[in-house]
Image (tube, rainbow, N blue to C red):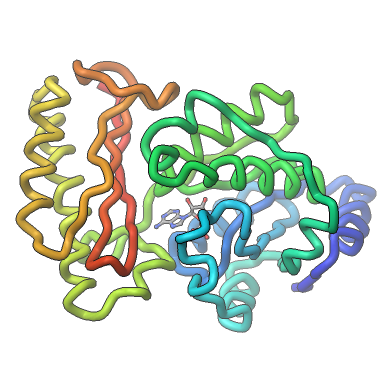
Amino acid sequence: MKIETTVKDVRKTVKEWRKEGLTVGLVPTMGYLHEGHQSLIKKAVEQCDKVVVSIFVNPMQFGPTEDLASYPRDLEKDSELCEKTGADLIFHPEPEEMYQEGFCSFVDMTGLTQALCGLSRPVHFRGVCTVVSKLFHIVQPDKAYFGEKDAQQLAVIKRMVKDLNMDIEIVGCPIIREKDGLAKSSRNTYLDEKERSAALILSKSIFLGKKMVEEGERNANVVKQAMTDLIQKEPMAEIDYVEIVDQNTMQSIEEIKGDILCAIAVGINHKARLIDNFMMTV
Ligand code: AMP
């Protein structure tokens, strides 16, 4: 497995693969990889001849008061995980390689990005769309893999690919959880033991909401209220949102019907802002 840091070198490697008629999968990440990322890499290895994992903590998708500086990094451990999972290339650029002096072009989206995480993280999706389109142009993959853990991001990327006629198949992969239910996230490492157990309130409320819908509840407000009440029992939890939206438009719904996304964002003890969700077709 190779590790490359420049756009030029990645292009050269991918060009050689293309000459041999091989297909290419891309797994974009910010590193500090865990089994959630690994499930995406595994899927890519199953479906493509060659797999590129990008590891880049993208400054553009962090707001000024967010955790860009403290975001965990460990390239050595990440490389081991990528290698043993069967990736062929890690693309690990410095911010200066991705955003050269004078950089002033962005991919922006309205609508879908103005709900859920977009409300409290106003610059986030512009950063995500811009960096993902850059990665798509650099690697030119046949398929790219994204987790349902970031359900809004997945919807945004699918929309971007459709709107901008990018010839790339977007593959969504299910949420990987710890044994006790907590969705795996690089940000879980911000929490000490007590905060880690407080964070279980996210998955508990997701499982509660899911059960209510499975058992026939169709009033979104009733489900959201029950989930909110449960989260509020945890003193370390600070709710950003508890929402039920249409999976494609991210617009709030009152009646639970069609392809729905129930998504939450909750801060834990001012240390980590975590997200979780379930999607369902009703
Ligand atoms: P990140 O490094 O957090 O930007 O995540 C990179 C990719 O891995 C995104 O597509 C995430 O949705 C996905 N991912 C992160 N955590 C999980 C998880 N627990 N289960 C499935 N996919 C995940």
